[in-house]
Length: 158
Image (cartoon, rainbow, N blue to C red; front, side):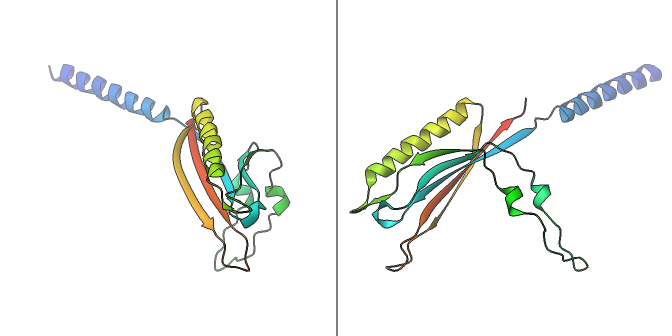
């Protein structure tokens, strides 16, 4: 009887460990895509506003160096190797025109950005994070500014 119990425990343990190993090895792998909207807040409508989406891939490891006390040589990667020339650019409207802030432009940009997000969702991407920042006009002499938003998507690699 002890042999039967031991054999049963062995079989159940083996089955559970096999199932656990299978679930670990089949955990999903993801790809990530960042979409950036840049909206001009330059007075008089002189800025440029766009949605930017890279079509090319880059491996950050190729442009990364580790600094230590013993070895603090600077990163020797070339900027031209990082640049992406294969990207999608979607026009947006500027926040300002000659008379000031233009709310119709903001609504139009919202519609275009919503369309982009809807398209990404239809392609199987999940929106997982959104972050925004503003570099605004610093006064009468500045005349520069942007509102930037990054939309971070992920999807399971098939």
